[in-house]
Length: 161
Image (cartoon, rainbow, N blue to C red; front, top):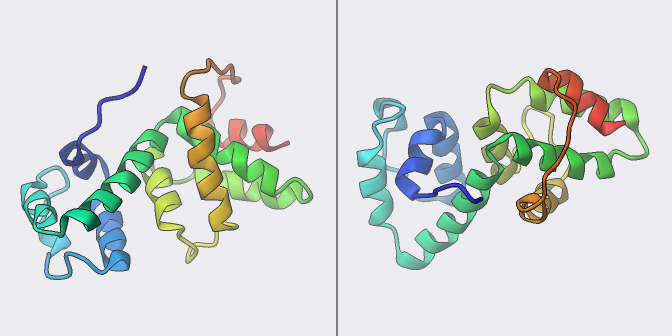
């Protein structure tokens, strides 16, 4: 069963520091002071977003929906599954990647970093990993997956082997 999605809820779920980075890379909402916006009080952000051109809003909303869909345990598993394929020839690097990703605060952080194709913290091997994880997430949406119940870092490392 799919989760409820709305842009307002998405803005409340995502950390402002990562939303600021997203909008900076898109070149929109430059005049908005994200530091002044409290984490869950996003009315000002939503109002500014609505002033963006409709075509741009639609493109961003598509990315927000994918990010929202990946911001859960199953989305994290889909990202790791795609990464495992890319690290198939280098299991040590794959395990290090999984541990760094698992060390992030929560699934929302992992999902929006996938959207940002973030490279400055050295955990993202390729934009292809993230595009593939979105496709994988859609495929896995209707399947029941059985994973060992373990802490995320250990489970992620084991999953990549």
